[in-house]
Amino acid sequence: MHRILWVDDEIELLEPHVQILRSRGYHVETATSGEDALALVEQKQFDLVFLDEMMLGMSGLETLQLLKRLDPYRPVVMVTKNEQESLMDEAIGRSIDDYLTKPISPSQVLAVCKKYLDARLLQQQRVTREYLRDFAQLEASIAQAELWEEWVEIYRGLVQWSLELDVHPDVGLDQTLAEQWRQANRLFARFIEGNYPRWLTDRPKEGNPLVSPHIADRFVLPLLRQQRRVVFVVVDCLRLDQWMVIESLVRQYYTTELHHYCSILPTATIYARNALFAGLYPADIERYYPQWAPEEGDSESSQNAHEADLLQELLRRRGIQLQGKFEYIKIYETEFGKRIESDAQRLVQNALTAIVVSALDIMAHSRSDTAILKEIAPDEAAYRSLTYSWFQHSSLWGILRALASHDVTVVLTTDHGAVRCLRAAQVVGDRQTSTCLRYKIGRNVRADAKSTITITELERYRLPRHSPVENLVLAKEDYYLVYPTDFHHYAAKYRDSFQHGGISLEEMILPIVILSPK
Image (cartoon, rainbow, N blue to C red):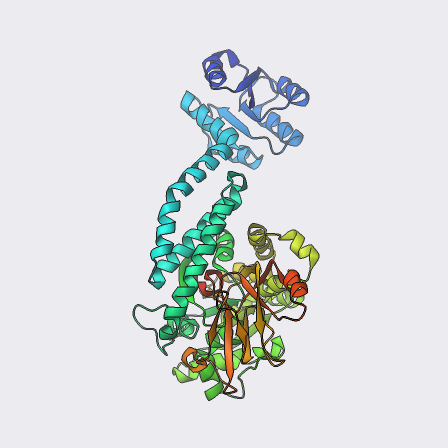
C-alpha cells in the first residue's frame, strides 16, 4: 500500500480529498506544519508528499528544501493559492516535482497520485496490452513483406518495441520479441538474397533502396551546390536503435530528419565506408583508383586510409567547386577527439568537413575480448545504454553542441551496423581467407547453406575479384563463422559478441539524419 503525507495548516478543509484517497487504497497521514511533517518523515516511510505553500511557522518552500535533503527521490507536490510565476520558478529551482493550484479537484489529486505512485504498473499494463495487440500484425507483416519499405517499417517496429521493453523489463515479453527478431532476420536474409543485386545501380532507381554509394550524391552534394556549409559525420557501426537512444539529446539543439538506406555487402568498413565516401562500388574503386583500393588483410588504418581522397574525387567527378576549405577528421581516440572538440568553432569556416568516429566500432569489437565491457553491456538493452553514456560524454557530442550555434547543416550517418551473434557455423577455407567472423572471402570458401549465403559471381555484387576460384560467404541472421580447427574453443570465445559483415536487419538498414540547428 502506498503511503501519502499531506501537509497543510488547514488540513480539516481537505478532509474530503483525504477520504477519497483512502477509499482508493492509499494510506494517508496528515500534518499541520512543516515541523510536524519533518518529524513524521524521519519516523516513517512515505512515497508521496502533498505540501501547502503558505503555512504558519516554517513555509512550504523551507519545508520542501529540508524534505529533499532527507530524501531527494521522494516526490513532493506543492499545493498553493499563489499563481505568481516567480513562486513557480522558486519551487522548481528547489526540485519540486509537481504543482497544484487551489482550489483543487479530486481528479487532479488522483491524477498526481497515479503519476507518481502507479505509473510503472499502469505503463507495464499498457505496454503488455499494446504489444499483444500488435503482435499478430507484426507477425503478418514479417511473413508477407516483399518490398524494402515494408522491411524498413518492420525493423523500425521491432526497434521501437525493444526500446519500450528496455524501459519495462519486468513485463516478461523479451523472449516473445526475441523470437520475432529471429523470424524477421530469417525472412529478411531470403529477401536480400532474392533482391539485393538489382539494387546495385550507379544512380538511385525508383522503387529501390538507396545503397552506400548513393548517399553522398543524395544528401551531401545537393547542400554543397546550394553553398551550404556541411559537416558530414560517419559514426562507424551506428545502428538504428543506437541512434534512437541518443536522438533525445541531439534534439535539444537540432531538428532531425531521419532517412534510411541499405549498406552494401559485405557490411564491413573496408567495403561499405569506402563506398560511402567514393560514391562508387568496391569493384569500381579498384578499377578506377587501384592505388587507393584496400585489400583484405590490410591493417584497419590502411583499409580506409584514402577516404578523403575518394571524397574529393567524387566532388571533382560531379563538378563541385567548394567555396571554402575541405577538411577530413578521423576521431580514433579520446585525447585527439577532445582536441578537435576544443577547436570545433573553426570547423564552421570550412565548406565541407568530413568526420569519422570510430568509438562504437571499437566498442563492438572489444566487447568479446574485454570481460569488464561484457559485464557492463551483457545484452542489447545494456549495449544501448552504454551507447547513450558514451555519446553523452563524447567529443562528438561536444562538437555537435558547438556547431549548433552556427549556420551549418550536419549530415550524420554510418557505414554499417552490427548484430549480436549467438550461433556458430562451420566454414572451410584456405589460409588466405579473410578473418572476419560474419563473412569470408577467399578461394573455394565453403559453409552450410542454412546459416550462410555463398556468392560465386562477385561481379554481380560489384565486388573485385582477385582469383578465378574466389568466392564470398556471408553469414545470415545471428550466425558467426568459425573454422573446424578448435571449433568449440572459438565458438565459445565469440558467442554473444557483436559482429558485422553479414546479412541482418541490424547490419543493413541504416539511419541517415539531417541535423539543422534550432
